[in-house]
Structure formats: structure tokens, C-alpha cells
Length: 223
Image (cartoon, rainbow, N blue to C red; front, side, top):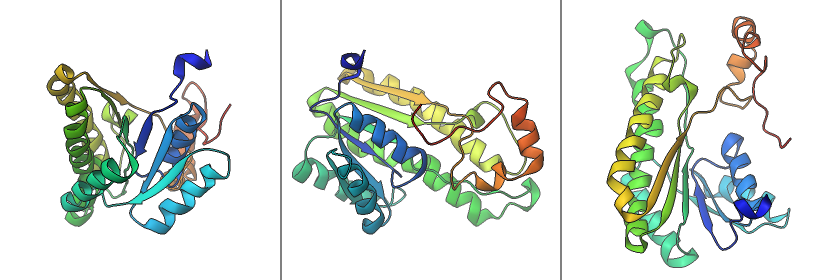
């Protein structure tokens, strides 16, 4: 079964992968042979996360760029392609969440959520796809969310951003299929991460979560 998922010789860029689900995804791909490119806004955090994989015997490097800044994204992707090698797999994982009642949600925080969660996916995918199109090969995976299918109080902009990513994924499928580029979206449920700590520690949320099938949040660990 392992050979079915053999990624030897492939190179994967995972945005926002210095911690949380992103780092877990990076480790999973590394286990199946992929060379990993860790991304974070700061080089120190990217390097630290990459070194954690290297210490386990995997091949990983850190590259810092802000997914919301078009110039940074373009320069970073060009540098990766020229100095590290072709990006075979892109996972758009970078994301943030802010919580306020709908009528009190600050415009600035709305902008922050939309920029990272929606615009970031667009900008990084756009640059990576240009290189994949030239090779007529590639895989792009967008991390959506169960919130793209339902709503919860205080995170309306987050749900809106993930709904947009779902439709962006569909649009990318249509545009990139002729270049043999596969685009998929994954919609995880709740995981216990730094971003969701406030929810996991909330009694009302925990009571709601207990009604779900697994009766708990996902955990950042291998089974």
C-alpha cells in the first residue's frame, strides 16, 4: 500500500506549514518520500520547522514569504523553481481565524481573514500554476474547511473565505485541467491547534463537538 502513495522524487510546497495542520501535512508527505518546502512569514520559523523534519531523516528546507503580498509570492516561487527545483505539489494551507459577533466584526479583521485565507490561495496558486503549466504536470490541494458548508457564530468571515476557496478550487479545476494539473479541495473538521484553542476550551463549543461522530477535535498526531 505504501507504494501507492510513493512520492519519491517529488517536491512539495506547503504554505503556513511551520506549525499546526500544515506541519503535520508536511511530515506526512515527507514520510512518503517527498522533498518538503516549509513556508512561514518569518525565515527563522520556517527554518526551525524544516530542521525538525531534517532531524527525522527527511529532506526539507524553509522559505519565508507572506502569501498576501503578490511581489513576495512571485519572487519566492521564482527562487524556489530556480534554486531548489520544480514544485510538483502545492498545498495551500495558510489560514487565520478571528472571532467577533457579526455586527461587531472590525473591517480590518475582515480584510485580514479574506487576504490570508482567500487571496493567499489565489496568489500562490497563480504563480505556481504558471510553472506547472509549462511542465504540463502538477497537483494543487486547497485546504478548505467544514465551515465552507455550514455556519457558526462569531466566525462568519472565516466561513465566507473558505466558501470562496471551495469555488476557487472548482474554477482552477476547469482552467488547469487541460495542462494535466489536478486541483482538489479538502475540508477538515475541527483540529486542536493554536488557531482553534479558544474554541476547544469553550464549554458550549465542546458540548456541540461532543454531539459529532468522533465526539472530539482532531489531533495533530499520526495514528
